[in-house]
Image 1 (cartoon, rainbow over the protein chains, first blue to last red):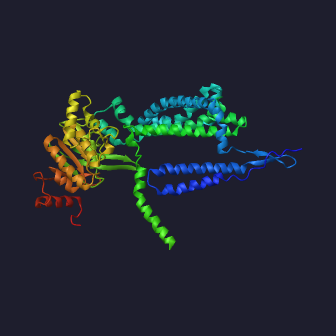
Image 2 (cartoon, chains in turn orange, purple; image 1 turned 120 degrees about the vertical axis):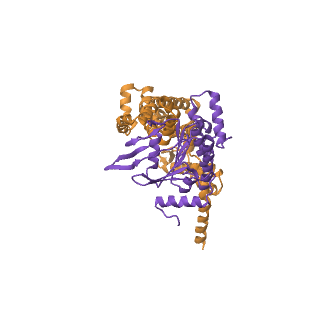
Image 3 (cartoon, helix red, strand yellow; image 1 turned 135 degrees about the vertical axis):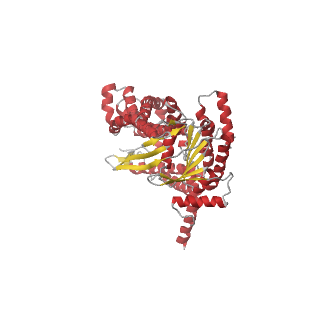
Length: 323
Length: 244
């Protein structure tokens, strides 16, 4: 005797309906004046992405039936958005997620500080002394393209499956962009600044402190921001293999236990923290001493200036089409 | 300057930029070096300023050969050379680092006001217009009470109205401070409006074609027949026709 558990569910229309709203939001958002589009457009894009995700998950799942052809249950091939949220409830409430995030952040911070501590002084020195640059730049450029992932076996050999392994990998991966950035920053200081400084009698440490360092600072900050982005990507890879905690480990551990909702949940957490780190680094660009190096308003000014022309063009095209 | 020449080594040979330049500038004089682009006038100025050494010949200031840059002889560059990471105040005070605090404050305040930037002390160069930035550069130069100011096309990046205003500013400051000014320009009117003497240079290799004295009292009437005569003469020396 077979008990009919349930009938297979009908097609899920919800993502399509939500997507229609998102498209309307996009249309409205492009026509409004700033700042509304800055919020509406990314929101609409985000909602559309979640809809597409839901549709893909719906299409991929299949019906599981017994030998007689009776429907047993639906099998999820990969988790839908809601299932992901539900799956993350446990690691979130029992504190695992927070603990792992802190563990990852600690490793990134430690490795990043080591890389900056060595990379910035070395880059400044090699940028200022041509002979130093000639000596070490080829070596740095040769080591730079080796993916940090390729270093994982060496890291484990040297440091074991411990924090030190992951920190070493982070330091390594952020060192090269930082040292290259600092070198380039000093080498591209406009000669007029150096001449001004010499003209007013600045030499030695005073020249360095009052001219070389501040002139190079904006590019160094850009290099740091770039390096932190790389470090955050590498930590996940490092934690998958070289340690047994952290968000990268969570991804791998959940996969091994076949909890794919947690895999995706951990990925999302990684993305959110990555965005927050980058936003934090961008705050540095607003400091008085370096603001001159970041013409952050330019983009919007150009856009504003181009708008009347673009609008006129579009109107012309639309009238032509209408005719 | 006696028998000064400059040869740059470059790919596939040498480039002679200056040949046998002889020039004496009196203390307190305002001399313009006038010539087309590439005639070596900036190179000459860099050597007089101590940033570069001549290939042959000697450059002496007050009887001593120039060996390097010196805070008593300061540059005002076309690209200003003021520091974008420092405020107007800190820029102007750059050359006063080793003086007592009150003195620095007094001198800085004086020159900031003299160039008309009072109220902008805390501003950063990126918040100022081109003309105001050049005023910062001028104030920074004057603050060290220099004997000589070298100006390398200092007004080249400004619009023509600002340039006119800045010329009379420079004249005013020159008359009140009494320093020697060596002014590089390719603008004929600029040279006649400013200079006691205009040194006309011919291109590649750069030589002095002629030195034209401008014996007109300031402020100079750009419509006067004497002004027109000098202007014609300069255009003639530069090999361009005046009437277009």
